Image (cartoon, rainbow, N blue to C red; front, side, top):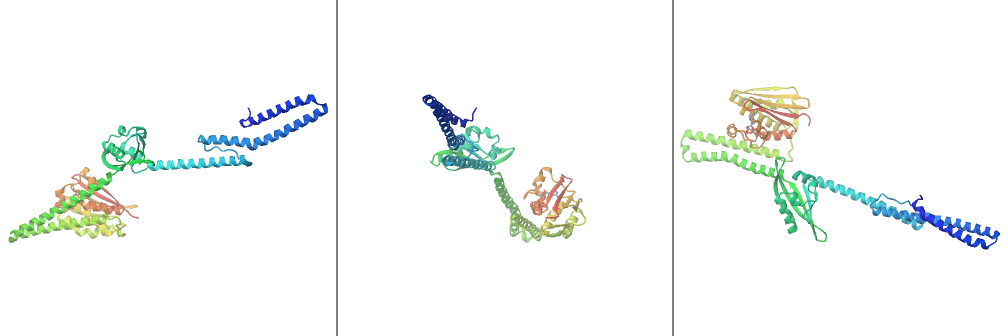
Length: 458
Ligand code: ADP
């Protein structure tokens, strides 16, 4: 019924009332009526003074101390929001102020701890590498998002399980065992298929050692090194391809030179025939080396384009004499069509290279009697440059690969036309440097259209 804090105060009042009533019952029968009045007034007065004094003690000391004790209890139970009302009277005042300061500090500390925990969790979850924490008994305690994307499943499929129950890869088991055994960092790698794609994963296992030098578990980090492996493979392929491409003309030049020296040079006919082969092969070498150097220049990270205002129509007209001659040699009808205003921002020498390569390819891969059409079309924010031919076309499955270095649909045919297999790789590179896009539309044995969209304002 009464507030809990008021109970002791009421108890004191009852005790005082009982004592006063007791004293009155003992004293009053012994004295005269006149003295009785004085005694009653004195007892009542002292009771009132006593009540006031008690109330003061209760209000200024007992009540704040009890409230502080209750708040301390709440703090112990983890409720850092609890506060006691503050009095400013003596030691009890100091106590309530201190308890509130303590509560505020605890609340702030717990808030900071929570924030740090959240930050740590966010960092762990957004790491580019997979993470797995195993305790000293081999039970999984932590996995992050990247780990799940590599191994699949949900967090609860791993938490609380022994690592060898949930991870099938032998190599992972070995890393864990060696990290426990040697108490030092262990590295290894394995391949796994994620959604039909083969992935290369590097594992680094490190022991988790407590301050007291006690081994507490092992942390495993999984790096996806697929891109790195691909790059390494590309570099190896590139070196092998370059060596192969250089070897063919050099072998031929050497062979014919040796044959000439062995006596063939005495025959006018053979000499002239072999020397023209040597000349042709050395020209091939020169073109190949030129293309390789061009690609290596384009590969440079700090490459700066010589940007200027260029008129695409004018550039195409500048290369026309060579293209015309090639077309005439193969009886191919070469036609041009230009919209008005064909100006873009770009590097004129490099753009010329793009146009030469595409027109050259169109003529090379179109049989005698076919046609090649060059179109420059103005479309709002972009300028489209297209080369359409009625040539041999490109099989659908080969289209994604034609921009790769040294990729050719038909190796012998490309070599016969003097191709290096690098032309389209150079084109793609230059177009990307101009922030343009390249599209291929081809029907096998019917013809091909290459279209490049150049943004006008960059
Ligand atoms: P290449 O020097 O062999 O022409 P490219 O990089 O220019 O090398 O082209 C790569 C391959 O793409 C060519 O070998 C050819 O098979 C195919 N290709 C390119 N352009 C055309 C085209 N217009 N028509 C048919 N095939 C083409």
